[in-house]
Length: 263
Image (cartoon, one colour):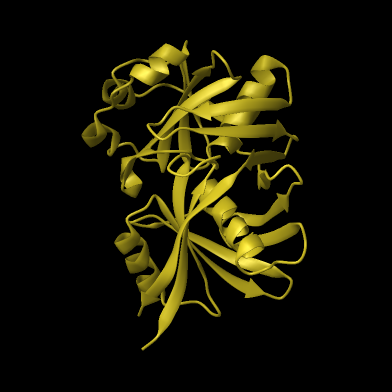
């Protein structure tokens, strides 16, 4: 009988049951791709991360219950937490590598925060499709298209909170997900993230979305350091720094469970 350790971590959370839960498996070598997908489906979390040590760095891949994705912030933060706390990673810096997103650097801060260093998304303004406007029930001020997601700009935090998407219609939008955002009342920016195509109607806290949000709001607000809040039911706070071609995304993590998968 073969077993595999698994950890579940609440990422971008100060206390348990907030932020975004992710599962993490640190492997000696890669499992078959279909097995990793089935594990992610069985976990039924927004993301399951698989990590394999490769020399001085770690190769990382991310799976939703339905498919493998190019980049995931909260599951990378959760993976770093596991390596620091459960695998005694000796340094304060971890170098991850992803074939889909290149090098991803993670830093452990003395404050207890874990900081992700991710490539900045490139945004192009596009017309708002009738389908997206109808699916969200409210036409945005502007629409941008990034590498994998749409970014929709709205007037106010109240609008972002009140959106009740039609996920059947939103599932027809050809993108990983749709980010909706506005200026925040108590923070610089607020957002929500919808990804029915990935099997996640609404993601609790989406680190990778802030590679799109940060450059937009940094330029609009004229500042490089921003505090963001994702307005999901669980909620989460993200500290962001715009560095031009890179974005720093910082948050805390809280362990929920550890166990073994019987394969």
